[in-house]
Structures are given as structure tokens and as C-alpha cells.
Length: 156
Image (cartoon, one colour):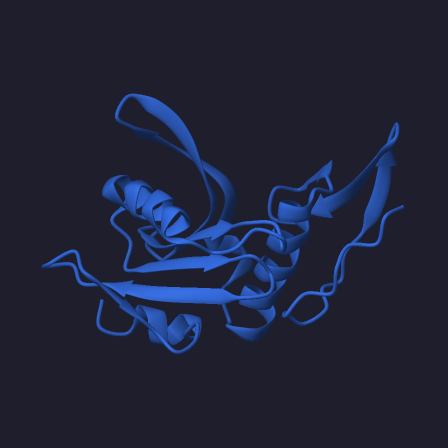
């Protein structure tokens, strides 16, 4: 098995398996085994970070959330919800070798046309960015860090 790179995230308690020649990892949020890709490696570490270090309840995070954008079905990598199940944040993952670019932010901003979340988060496992969206102007303000869940809910 190829050893995935060490990420700029705390270690995650992952369970690995095999499906033929493919290495799999158990996704506790989807309650299923999925192929371990570089992006999935980042997703599993990042969702563990959100629950363990940012206090996001596991029951309020969904992986691979489908949305319809301009008549096309798209998938948000992760969506964080409020206790009333209103989308609060969209998280987009890239492989550790993929640079976070303007194009990545444009993708998540398009998804936000549908979900209208307060936060947009992008990570490649090495670098993490979080923007707060101004609901009146639609502008984004880059934050210094990813806020704890209770802070994300403040002022809603």
C-alpha cells in the first residue's frame, strides 16, 4: 500500500480495508467503505478535525451532498449544518498535491449560489482557508482560522 502523505492536520482514527486491488477507508459519516484516494485521505482527516477539534457534531456533517446547479447535479464534498439543519458551511477538498487556487474558490462559490452558507472552507490537507460570506453583499472575508462550531453559529 502506498503511504499517503502526512497532512497539516491532527492524525485521524481511520479504518482501512481492501476491495480487490483498491485500498478502502471507512467513512463514519456515510457509514460505508470508500476507495482511498488522495482527496478522500484529506476528507477523512478534515472531518475528524472538525468533530474533534472544532466541536462540529457528527450528526450535523454530511459528505458528498448532492445539489442541482443550473440544471446539473453537483456534489459538495462536505456540508456542515446548523442544529435546525440549515446549511452553515461548505467544505471543498483537493488532493495534497493540488494547489488551492482561485478556480477552487470559484467552484465553492458556485455551490453556495444554491446552499447560501455563511462559511466556505477549502483544504488540500496542507493549507486550509475559511471565508465568511456577507449575506447582504455576497462578499467574502478571509478568516485567520477555521472557527469552532459554536462561534460559527453565533449571530445566526
